[in-house]
Image (cartoon, rainbow, N blue to C red; front, side, top):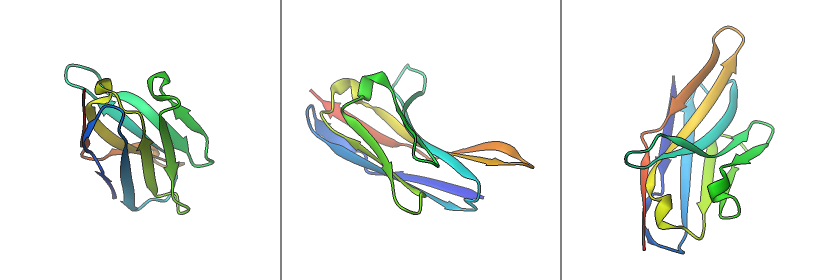
Length: 120
């Protein structure tokens, strides 16, 4: 089994910064990518940023130049540095860990989410 736990959300003023952390633990063999998603009230969950096992990153257009995704050397702890935050960044942020194995195919695990609120 895999556990995915986020931390680091909170309340910040517009223009401020926050850093989110996500730790994946348990049976992490076959981890191929991790990412951050967010969901605002009334909206669908959307990709914010992702990083593959070989370090390839992808960002939503709305956060390019403001957010940076990174991970530790063990590739099991994920970070999201969020700068120049805007009120429209307010959402619950979820960490996603994706795995692949030849026998089980692709599996995804989600964290419980952490609230980010940006005041104007």
